[in-house]
Image 1 (cartoon, rainbow, N blue to C red):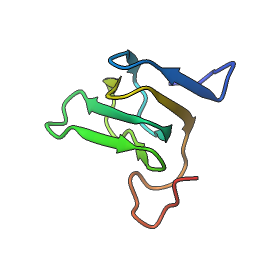
Image 2: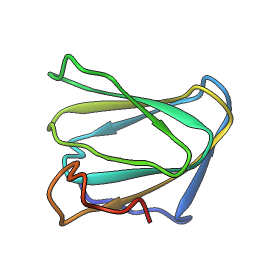
Image 3: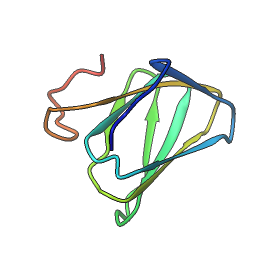
Length: 89
């Protein structure tokens, strides 16, 4: 996936969903609010709240849904996926 965003931060309303295809390696950082992330082929869903981040590991489709009004940023990441030593910045 090539990530081309005009704005580095996306605003999501409560319940709004975005779909990412083939986004392995993309880092989702919740700047405000809380989002639910589910990856195709991964039985575990992830809740990402303000100040935390999640790196998509699986190829295929990923859904991100706002559980509250949220601001998220996304960028391609070169660090190991979901390494607990990473910072959320």
